[in-house]
Length: 541
Image 1: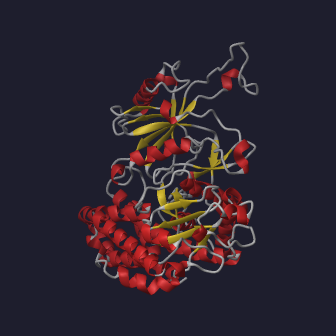
Image 2: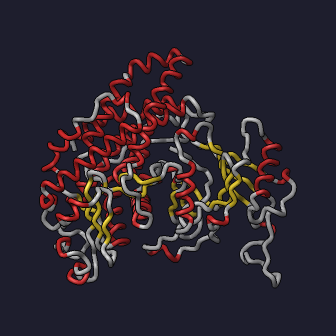
Image 3: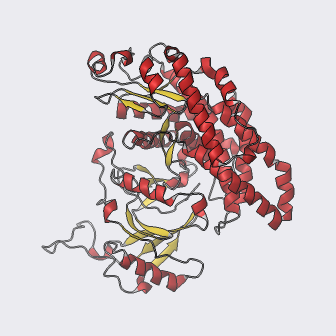
């Protein structure tokens, strides 16, 4: 969870692959034009009211943010702190109205009186201690990449512990909105668009999914946080003892071992699509925009969708925002509504959808190979997790070399024997016409079936050993819609368990360092309890 906005910045994104390309957008602030002042900061602990406004205006001037140079009186600024923020402190900064005229003296904004043209930006001050949870370099890297595609908020200026972002009038979705069938399908479309950014900015070789990396890095921090919590609050010690965190670590390891047999492709994932991070524009388009990419990165598709489903159970604007409501988890029919829309969006954008490779034959052998992983995840370090990942990758390559043809199923093509034997598990293969794409990430295999103009024509661009037998030209490769939806349903629910793990650990760490008024300890126990409650049910799917 990151931010639940009442107001939030965004620019309606332009999808290069969808019918939204004609959507009106604000002028783009290119990332290379953004100033980065590494030595300047805002001390929220000591700056309040008038002094905070003065410091804010100073930074706006230092960064030469457009339209703010003529504002000289800091008392004309209004800073409104946005409620519901769980990671950062966020302010809507409003200055005196601006007048914009052309060289001829005519107003640019014909439908507005000059005195009513707003001057607004969003100020984001990073929460204390977040450097242990978030890589700001990675976040800014993705924000710059997304800005080149007109996706997400435009950066206006960056300083040591925060930044200014473009502001556009919008409304945040509510917990009720995301349940509406039509809105849910709309969210699925937007998520699919984000996921397919992986084809524009492909991951590096030996890329570890973001969830796995976070969990490996956060476990030691969470265990240290538990010790601190018990020392500072004896009443919570009994709660900690009753929860049995040592057992939890073993349970986490067991689930991850099982997930090595579950197909879930690597995508560009937002990783935090709670309702407060999804906006609806106030213009006629009513477009949905996903914001706040603090936790974004390469991750499994199953996590990102499963995490969104978990967020259906949250109510961050209630009297007890840290409490989950498990009965609100989407039903199977509600999930299939979302997944069907996701699948349709992928076919519309790319001409294919993902089809699961049948790895059942290898399940038993994979489990035996992963049994070498040391038990007791409480002793795990990042290097140990990386070693585990390397073991699984070797296992995948060994299986391919032993029986490369057995990965194929009716209507689904496979890699050639030579490719499988000589290529690293993270290599991406793209046909010259872009309609066929085969990937193997880690131990998970994915085939993206090309739609193409002509089966024969598009297949001629591939090596003979990799030409596929196509289905009915619908991007399915001969796999039925019901089969694909069933596979995705199982995938996202199993990976939803990792959402509970990750945010549960996050809550424990935040409980010892965040200055934001939120019961992180209770939230953590809620997420980890849900992991335990749903574990057997979801893994049995």
